[in-house]
Picture 1 (cartoon, rainbow, N blue to C red):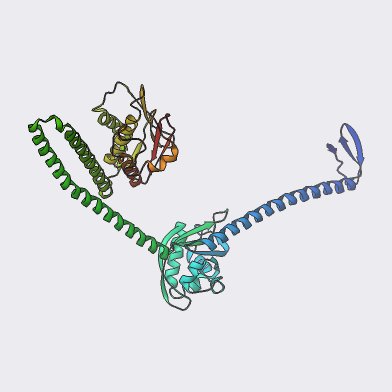
Picture 2 (picture 1 turned 90 degrees about the vertical axis):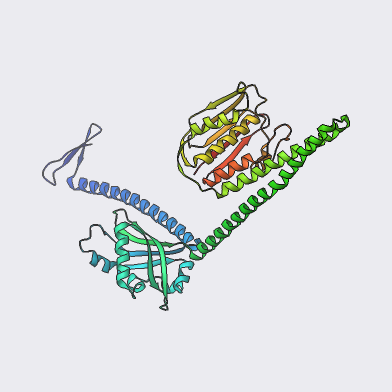
Length: 431
């Protein structure tokens, strides 16, 4: 619409609308324009009102979540809010600003665990200011607030008082929160539950002691079993010499029995070695460095195939990441996993073993061997557990248990996916 307006306020006004002329009185046009302006403002007010309602809903949701946190947290929580936000960084006189804070920042919420520390009820504690909380030592309180506002967050121990005046030591993490203009609105103090921490520390000590006792037991039993095994082997060799001198055909059955005793003795020796390896794993201190995995894999393949023919083995090595870990223990992981893959895929032509990693640095060793049903997967990492007959696949059943312990010692996890006759893939990820 084009308006052609005369300078005189009461002269007729011509408006061009859709190529037609309309005649308006000047006063009537003013009223129409005012109505348009009013409608526009009402529309804007509705939008603003809608935005405010959304903000109120969000605020209520935040408040509800905060209430749940305060009600159910096992940590000591204390929330203090200022009457009006402060621009601490641009404050010219920070001491005067602290005067305001100490008079106008109030306890808005505190959970049961924290109230117990102060020996107070919720009604007694809500609304308290820093001036009241640190009445016994205002300088300590002002120093705490000054450092907190400077840094935005702080870990601090403070000497405070219960409401009855009894001294208490409070340790907590203080975190400021801000408005959209970057002004400080208040802060939250989080103090990990000391009773819970003490309980966890005691449990950790007990578990550590139990592990030490188990390691000592393994080590002692392993060494104690060596002596009778040596005696068995010694007498077995002496008996064979005596029987060979007799050269009696009837003794063939006896020789068969001796072979069974010899095989059982060797098996027992391997099991003892497995126990010793598990024991040493727990006692060995981790030496953490940045480790390139590809050389470890190459060495592992050489060790595994040293006494095997490699004609039927196809190793595919992908892009392996560098990790933080103990290179000696990680070498053992690859030896055991690759040996396991080769053992259970040797009847394939060719046996394909793939060592690679995924985008999130999860490493895997995959084979096209006989596989297994996943219903038995939970038994796979147990010491001396076997899923296949030993006569077909010799071994002690300790290799994967060693792998799992090494991965766990690195703070990682290991798992497997498999199907019968479709191979198996072992995944592990280090922390």
